[in-house]
Length: 363
Ligand code: NAD
Ligand code: ZN
Image 1 (tube, rainbow, N blue to C red):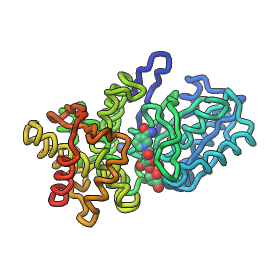
Image 2: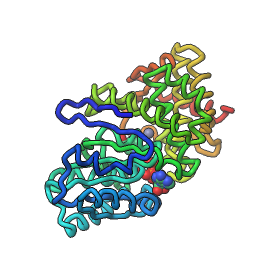
Image 3: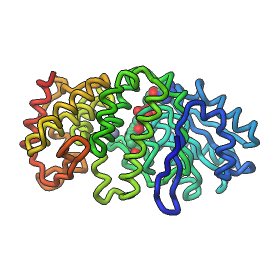
């Protein structure tokens, strides 16, 4: 499967298929990557042992010069220290303006390597090879960043990749919890844009959980298509792009209050999306918005109940600190039907608080 992210002269393709990595060199040839300047592949300590040797070998067989860097797996690698270390390695390896940075891994590696590509010599070529389901979201759209101890994703840039290269075979080794967490963003893309896709996920959740290549390929294609459509219309988050935050206002607060270890990102936004559905129904959406949202998330093995021990005051506090909060009101993405949302710029904190309490009773 192939689709295009339409951004004028910065448009780029997303390739999705099983076993694509075997042909990576020919795709690079097609895109005119340099065989003189080194390619810099960045991966993490879980992904590198599984897939880096193959990627390196296929590229070298195709006549490319390859240098590699492996960072520890986990969010803590999205740091300025790790960024500087990679710049050091890039300089030592002699990367130049015609080089490309290649991210081989999940969203952590994509965001980190992408920021290196955006900053090195004021920006060099960048290619994403996502290896998680969640990365169908993070690899498309051009946002790259590292974290600061005081705030996530606060040091970053917009730097579009020139291709996204999704080999479904790499997903076979994903831990089950990562599979489910990634599916939360797939469901999100359905809920904000495409009723039929939501129905499809509802009917095929078992296949997705079993990592059926045909089903996964379709789900990632559809998920990327929605993200592509939104980003093409609003590259720099002026307005429309905000709808990608469905479930994220509550979700981010939950992740923070749970100290980023108890809840995975996808689990937190799953609970957040149920919260948004409750708000939607309160504001006039049909009851099925709540029922379908909850059912599809549960079919994907995701939680819908907010852990009771997470303190409501702390959750509200964390939301107030979120950048989406302005003058006593929150900007909130609210479903109006399945596959449709609106941006509500005057959501009262009281109402959200009541929903947080209610989420602790979901079953
Ligand atoms: P991740 O990159 O940490 O990957 C999750 C875990 O799975 C890691 O331990 C990783 O080593 C392991 N892993 C990856 N691929 C594997 C494979 N094929 N087999 C076995 N193990 C594998 O996390 P993620 O969930 O992919 O991404 C989360 C990050 O993405 C966060 O930092 C988040 O901020 C970022 N993000 C960015 C955007 C964006 O628009 N830039 C959007 C959403 C999320
Ligand atoms: Zn997300």
